[in-house]
Image (cartoon, rainbow, N blue to C red; front, side, top):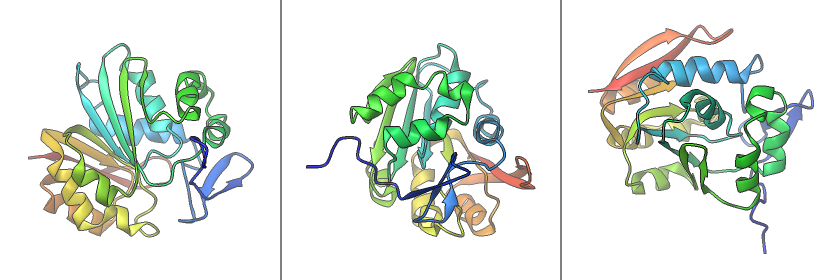
Length: 222
């Protein structure tokens, strides 16, 4: 019988601190500062926290280390919001804790999350955030989701290495599960991703990226 917190991620560690997926040959966060990148791409890219209000729904493709969740926790104050993330290969609590050690500000608020995760909880309350982590292939789990997001964090591995998470069918499901006026933000400006997002009903714009990345993408659902 498998343990509730058994890792499904296939990892190696760069500089003994940065988790790298051997399945996709891609790091889980920026080699510069992952927390700064999260704030630049996903928070500012979705005009957060300014848009937050009680019941606001954030959805995410690619939960990874939970760094985006913790950055959102730090930013949202006491506003009660919902956070749903879709993850195919969850890391263990020990792996996540090791990764978060690189970010003292996130690590400082991570204990309740790590305790819930270690118990095998994938639905839990984290301060004012109602969290639901949906495990499985997003191409199957997202279409079955009954929610609609006000903001999307599109944070899968690189489109060049994980094209399935950026394909037209899945991105169409993102569009279908976005509230009118809802937004997305992502670190990638790959042409086929932008075209898929436009086909899914988003007005897509290119914005300055974080660090060495020249561009990122953001958009609004018409």
